[in-house]
Image 1 (cartoon, rainbow, N blue to C red):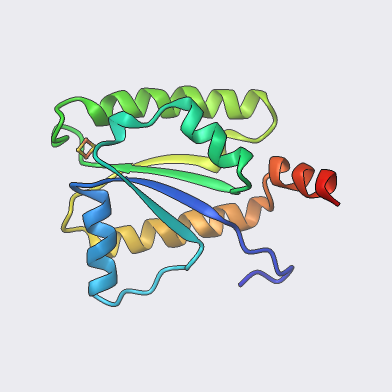
Image 2 (cartoon, helix red, strand yellow):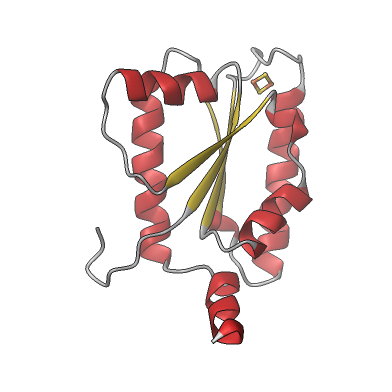
Length: 145
Ligand code: FES
């Protein structure tokens, strides 16, 4: 919990085969990680595109994680390398529109890395907590007032 009461909302787009399995493993190992992360399961991170990421921010999240298989281990061969390129591009777009590229990060992990998933989720939550609310969600709240 932050001192100013801000608790970020973070979406984690996780591939079915590795990252999502690692998140499930973290749960079954009863590892603690912040409840700020909403896992959205995809068959492969190769499915992710710029619009998914922008829509998540438009929807009010403060940070986005994309988590796929280790490089060379994607079950769809090159999905995670395509996702890596798209995430790099999306970071540039987020930077240019004032949201900030550091609110988006891609991770690669295997299905057996439950503890690492918990660590990544904790570190990402801390990073976004330090950045504060996304400018998009701040503006949205002001418009809706
Ligand atoms: Fe995991 Fe492609 S199946 S990133």
